[in-house]
Amino acid sequence: MRGRVYSCGLDAAMDVIGGKWKALILWALHERARRFGELRRELPGISEKMLIQQLRELEQHGVVHRKVFHQVPPKVEYSLTPLGARLNEALLPLGDWGEENMTAIEAVAAA
Image 1 (tube, rainbow, N blue to C red):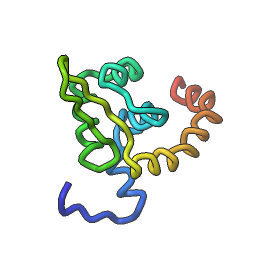
Image 2 (cartoon, one colour):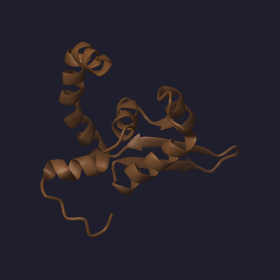
Image 3 (cartoon, rainbow, N blue to C red):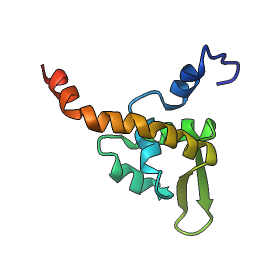
């Protein structure tokens, strides 16, 4: 991640949310902090390994916070940082566009 020079703001944003799962993870965290198992259930199709990897990358980018509760059994919660909350706000219009055009997108994909 160090030493990366971006060509524009969109390039920087896509570096943070690029891939299939990161934006969905951010969306799952928009209302409240969630435990790992909750995220896994909310994102059907994601493997445990992929979820761990994506959460680590989001944490490295400073958009997700990982809080460890030292108890037995161990408990870990993930939440959005202020930077992550701002990123989620920026994703709202994209989600709206997807909702408005979902039928057309599905039709093209099926063709």
